[in-house]
Amino acid sequence: MESTNTAHQVASFLLETEAVKLRPEQPFKWSSGWNSPIYCDNRVTLSFPYIRSYIKQQLAELIRQQYPEAEAIAGVATAGIAQGALVADCLEMPFLYVRPEPKKHGMGNQIEGRLLEGQKVVLVEDLISTGGSSLKAAEAVKAAGAEVVGMAAIFTYGFAVAEDNFRKAGIPLHCLSDYNALTQAALANGYIPASAMDTLAEWRKSPETWGA
Image 1 (spheres, one colour):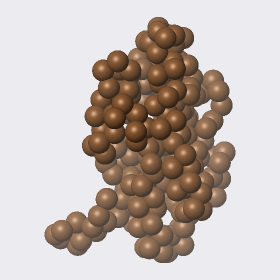
Image 2 (cartoon, rainbow, N blue to C red; image 1 turned 180 degrees about the vertical axis):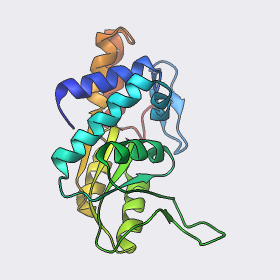
Image 3 (cartoon, rainbow, N blue to C red; image 1 turned 60 degrees about the vertical axis):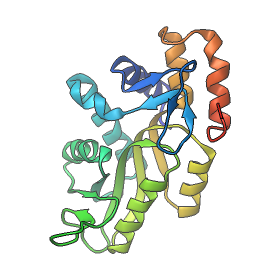
């Protein structure tokens, strides 16, 4: 994760725009079947120009600092496409995006855009949960002959399984904000009472069994 100030500011923006919603007493049901006190859709931030620009600039700076060798930006479909395009424009780098799987018609592309052999690519995501879909996109880029130098994302839940998956894949991951920063910002800004913090911490420890 990046600096504490950036992490807190991004978390505050996610809460302000309702890109993140916290409901410890009325959990959401994820597509995975997990019960969760949090729902995150960072695409909402695209509708707020100032916040959109802030996130774009922070992601661009993250890439400059952590991946100075980067030569192209790839958005992970679908939520990472818009964020990646904004960042690529800010960095004046080539942009492409990666589908979850090849198209069933036309050219059958999984990667849209011009990807060069040996090109050093940074993937951009809006959200990291287990890391499965993100790493699948990274594999597609590598299979096409390019080099994945790392991944940048707006937010991560910080699950141990995601950290393990990225470590095993040998792909560095850097995120602007995370779950700890989010819960602290939610408490500081009055989105949740102090009594909810224990519940939120318990979910983070074992999300797959929480509330079952």
